[in-house]
Image 1 (cartoon, rainbow, N blue to C red):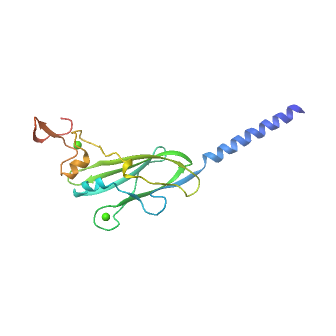
Image 2 (image 1 turned 180 degrees about the horizontal axis):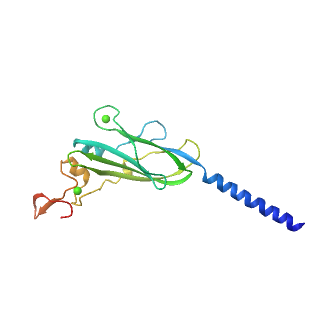
Image 3 (image 1 turned 180 degrees about the vertical axis):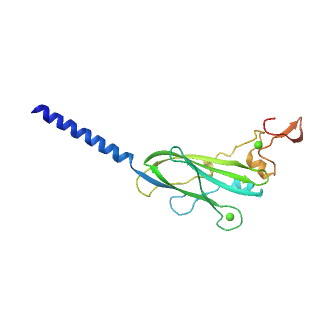
Amino acid sequence: MKGIIIRRILTTGVWIVLLSLAGCSGEESNVVIGPPDSTGGIKIPMDIHKAITADGTLRAFVSVPGVVEKQPMTVEDLDQDQIPDQARATISGVPVGSHDFTVEFAFEALDFNGTFTLARATKNLAVVEGSDNTLDFDIADYSDDFDTDDDKLTNLFELENNLDPSSKICVVGFSLVGRCTLGS
Ligand SMILES: [Ca+2]
Ligand SMILES: [Ca+2]
């Protein structure tokens, strides 16, 4: 008799554990990249505007490991002055729990036939059930020292000065002697 009761208690315990695990693994939520108190998006770092003097399009992406890889964000020019002001995205199906969110801005430069990373930021968010998941980014969150051609000039600086971010500048002594190809 005693053995049967113990077995029943153990069986019930196993079921409780299994059911609670199933409940946890199925919970997903949406995450809005934007400020918590509005429907707008995250502000685009002002420095990036310098690159927009070049001919091309500013792109923004958000990545969450195991959930989305480079999901395009909506880039908006609120006052229609041809300079984008904010970017936003809603990521659906994010499992409840802690995740790293990486936002990246890149410029698709027509003159230089490439898309060059300008700024990137990563923040962690504990995603909860329901719709109360927003993640904002501040200017200070971004790093902007991306240098595709490794010539010690950042992509941002090169685009701002109409230089090709994919082609090194050859420096001999103190003189610029022209452009080198990547890897030379
Ligand atoms: Ca604008
Ligand atoms: Ca460079």
